[in-house]
Image (tube, rainbow, N blue to C red):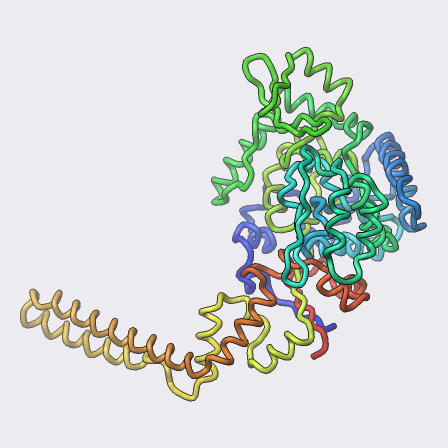
Length: 522
């Protein structure tokens, strides 16, 4: 497997907001703590060193309880769980939804990024321990986003009528889907048939894939962990503190020229119970669960927060704070949209006196199989060219490979000079002639542009077969017009190359913020 890297901007696939963060634009520096380079991790270690021993104890006990559901616990995972009790142990975490069969490729890329970051940190700081963590978004209720995956160009869909937190969904219906998926899917078949709940099944297959690397899977849908988060639940629901802080930050972002991607709500918690994850709103003096008949007086909700904190689930704006309160964490690894919304939250972290983590972009990649590589080689294109939209790509190829001179740029420049001369002569003779001269000149130049476009179309017809081949390559590497990593499942490659995931671990550099092109031998 060969590795090539290209700058993020050259992919035309990322927002300017994200790119400016990666490029360390000075206007964004007030909205985060330390930029994620190796030297800055030492500062982050110092700031997180006050993480409470009591929280470490609850965290380790919770993880041991959750991992009892696995029949086999790798020694690497067990050692990492035990090490969390040590003041010199810290985590690097990524989070993701519980997509069936892992969902798109970038789920794998996220996890490899945290694994390799911990390895790099251990090498640079041998006196400390670093544990990679996958945070399961088990409380998320957006079933539509997790119910399908794409393999070999076909979409496979899991149908269920369950509602509420997806981690609590039953796996029974997924077992029917197993019969339709081609190739070796034993990792998933074992997970979905041996576990009743989706969260437990995800833990098992992630452990099968990455347990040897020491990756820990945490399910934060837990009473003991929520108890630690109780002061924030009270401050949000009863005092609306995070809302005011985020609103203030968003105004500052707007003043710096950035549009905040997430708008906070006055209350940023859902009510979580069996089959229910409903948004909480305050109406007059009562608190209601939207789209339900559930409601509480202020006294009742205070009592519920105190006695049953597990029934409160943070939304996207407060989940990051929950994560950082219960983990001795240094950095969060995320995609472009995730990292941008974290930039809204520093004021909240400062208020609750929680160190703001370093925000690391995950590894981004495109995998080029041998067949596609051969087609690209024959086409004469560079891989980087394929990131352009199709019409530009076709025009670029035709202009580069045509035996004819298809550009009328020189003729248009010469005509422009002639027309300017005519305008000057008209102006000297009678100024009222100038508008007509300009209009006629514009019409003639437009005519040359039309001729140039028709010449290009004619040349395209002569190379129709080759352009169709280029289109085929583009469609294969950018399914549905999107980056491969956002659409295709890793089984597209893992079934052909059982060492695929290990090769990714070997190739990815988590601290090199460029786009990776991974190519198999032609």
